[in-house]
Amino acid sequence: MNASLEIPPPHSANLGALLADLMDEIGLTDRALIENYLVPLLEAKETKFVHDRGRLKEKTVQALGIRHAALDTAFKLRGSYAPRNPKEAEQFGIKVVVVDRGHRATQSM
Image (cartoon, helix red, strand yellow):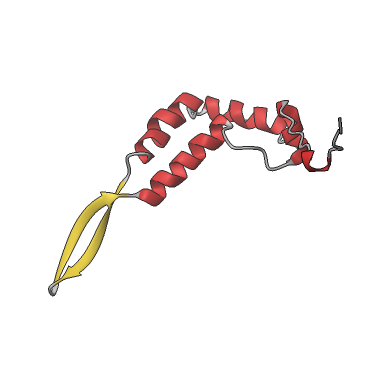
C-alpha cells in the first residue's frame, strides 16, 4: 500500500473533515461509535470487593464514573454544552442584555 495521507496543521479547518473521513473508512462511523461503544458504556457495571466479618465479598454495582464520562461524551457530541470561548458563543444568536432599573429617574406629577 503506497497511499500517503497528508495531514494538515492541527488548527486547520480541514483536519476535522479528514479525521471524520478516515474514521468512516475504517468503520468508526458516528452510528457505529454510538451503538457499539457509547450505549454499552451507559449500562456499565463494575465489581466492588469488600471485607465483611472477615470474609471477602464481591458486589456488582453501577459504574457511575464510566456512565458519567459516557454521558459527558454524548452531550459534547450533541453540542449540548454552552461554548467556553466567547467568540464561539457569539455564533449562537443569543444575546443577553442586562438593564439596571434601579437608577431610573422618577417622574413627579
